[in-house]
Length: 111
Image (tube, rainbow, N blue to C red; front, side):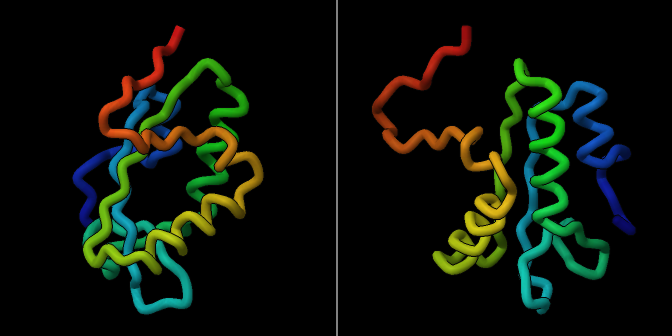
């Protein structure tokens, strides 16, 4: 990105020990969503490439847990569905997801 507020790419951050990421989902006027840094002109990343790199890391490091938080400037059901479609297109990605749906239920415990 042109104006990052971080030094490392996600892949280098994973190797350095980072295990949580906030990812900005943007519709940059292209046919597909992108990860950007708030504004598209500052740089974008292909969502499927990022998810593939993440799944590659998790497959090599099966004891690790990574938390993803998605920020969407123009949140819509279409955008959420499009993002999930990108996740589902990466083999094994959805199988490794945990989505906590019940606000009252306890979160699972990692042993």
